[in-house]
Length: 599
Image (cartoon, rainbow, N blue to C red; front, side):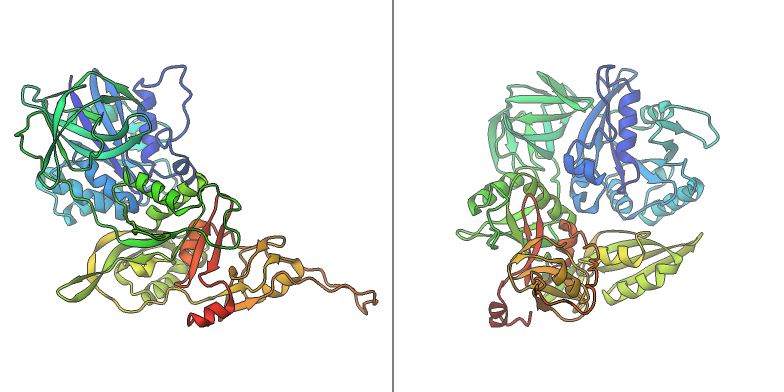
């Protein structure tokens, strides 16, 4: 059988998963009985809610008797480490770009990796039906990007196609009247080289991704480089350090549509899943012979952000969650490490605190949100950037940032990013919209997104991705506001909150149960402790004037991401299945003063 192996890469929300859905539908993968949802590839609950792809997924379609293995990759920068490994499994990539926005940071990041591996991308300009679409201009931007990234002459001769992923339409030229994706299928079959299929050689494959199954345990996903892999085969696992172990393949799966199909054998060129190796890891070579040479190693990007996960010890601990002990949190984090390759956890010998490091705020917040939904209660500290030293010089991670805002808000954004040590590298203004390009410390972006959305009235977009390590840029003031802290336990009253809200925006509504040390709002000046549970004293004396009607401004919805952005060094986010609260590390005012805080 002939194989074509491709990955689809794109920035967040450029329509990658929607296009894969259309390819699955039009290739005849689904039967008439199948119930087909939108973004069917986004099978995870969080992916559906956020509208983004978090985990790389494999699927396969049959076109004209040829099997096309497709890998749908994450579009968010925090999950970029998955994309790099996926590129080793494929022979070409579909580079999907929005017909208005053009190349974005994630596009640039993944394209650089693709070109370095010698892959020749197919450019797909999507959403050409947008009123603001400018496909010809975007095509020129992509070509300029190829040149900037040092593409070879052969790579600069890339093929391109125009699509409307939502409607399942592909066109070689904008004037074509085509109404399906047949031109895209033809372009893939014509342009993507057939996978090398040397079935006579001894079998070798490399693990590029991990999955976990409750029945068969850890599963390795990878491409068979040469030979034929059979179920029940005894194989040699070549570790990253060169050591070798013998194991037996207990399950062998290949892909058909969205399902994995158990098979007895698979040949070179196909992408498969294998079980039976309990400690299998990314980058390891699976070989048929004991003296086989290891395949080139796969590098995994080191984490750039860390935070502490702790047992919840607030006054409300144990009320809403069923999984609350340090043992349960430890077991869950160990289980996460089975498949989440970009994550790193430091487990103390004893204690209730675990240092969890990841690729960014989104990477870590997705893990916390999953644990919350599983019934866990925990509290987490402020995210901190991981520094490193080179030749005695303190180095910190830097990000490439692209901001698109209406012209009238660009001045405010430039001022704010400047204060956060951002260095502007490019500025373009067109049709009332300004694009700003920056290089800035990761620290400078922590806690900025909510402020950015407020400054741009929700009309701006901000994208960023890790670029490199550079010398430490000095102190950055993350937060200019203080906190409003509850000094008393109880249930909040409208009467008390009406006076508190004059100090700053609130995070809670009347009738909310609070405890001493819980943060209930943001103070526009210094941090202050208030009484939000005070009730109006009732007397039998007749008032000289009618009571004023109490008007409470609706509180800010402090979800998990906002809370993680907001908290200061001396605060925790308390996460339970039902609530996300912010609290001081030291709950009483006396304890805070004793710890050296004025809060």
